[in-house]
Every structure is written in structure tokens, then in C-alpha cells.
Length: 92
Image 1 (cartoon, rainbow, N blue to C red):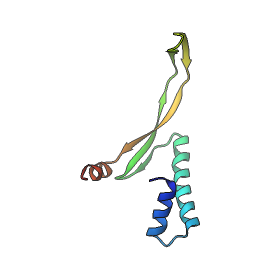
Image 2 (tube, rainbow, N blue to C red):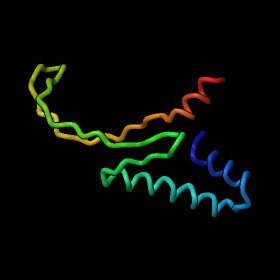
Image 3 (cartoon, one colour):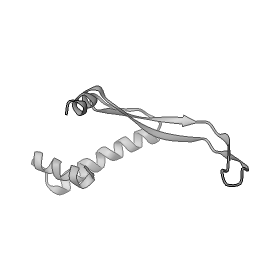
Image 4 (tube, rainbow, N blue to C red):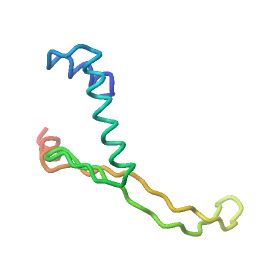
């Protein structure tokens, strides 16, 4: 399911117009993105949680030349499946 399919599904299940459904989905994704950018954890009970892992910088190696290169520190978002979602997916 992509964003437009999600908007269409929301519109079909509620009495929202397409514009209203688009705004709801947009606000939902913006709220999650903003929270992760601030380093917060987002938890949707039974569905999933999103969190940010921080990695220290380290010395890597260029596979082509063998030269050592410094890999900068980084923060990456992660997704963890909730129990209810996992059980529902495994029951099919």
C-alpha cells in the first residue's frame, strides 16, 4: 500500500473528502518524522514503534583502493513490529 492508496482507503472508510484525507495522512507522517528528527520514540500500541539509533564514527576501508576512510557518525530510523501486527501477519 502506498500513500495514495492509504488516502483512498481512509476516504472510503470515513466521510472525509479527498483533500481532508490527504491532510490527515500528511499530518500523521509529519508528526512521526518530526518526532524522529528530535530523537524521540514513536509508539503505536499493537502496530509498531519507530526509534532512532545513533552510530559513532569509525574508520572504514574503500573496497576499491584499500584506502582508509573515516565514516562520520550518523542517526538512522528503525521500525519494530508490534505483537498484534506480527500475530495477524503470521495467522494468514
